[in-house]
Length: 62
Image (cartoon, rainbow, N blue to C red):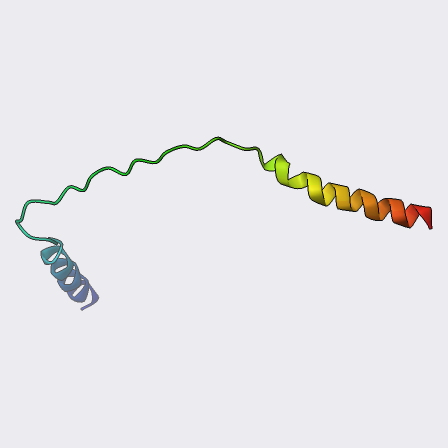
C-alpha cells in the first residue's frame, strides 16, 4: 500500500513538472554597475582609536 501511494505521488509530481507557457521569453537589458573608487575599511577605525586613546590618557592621568 505504501509503494502504491508513493508511486501515485511521484507520478503526480512528474506530470506537473512542466511550468510556463509557449510564449517567447522576455530578455531584459543587462544591469551595468559603475565602480566607484575603493576605500579601505581601515579609514573608519581612526576615530574610535583616537577616542580610546583619549579615554586611556584620562584614566592614566588620574
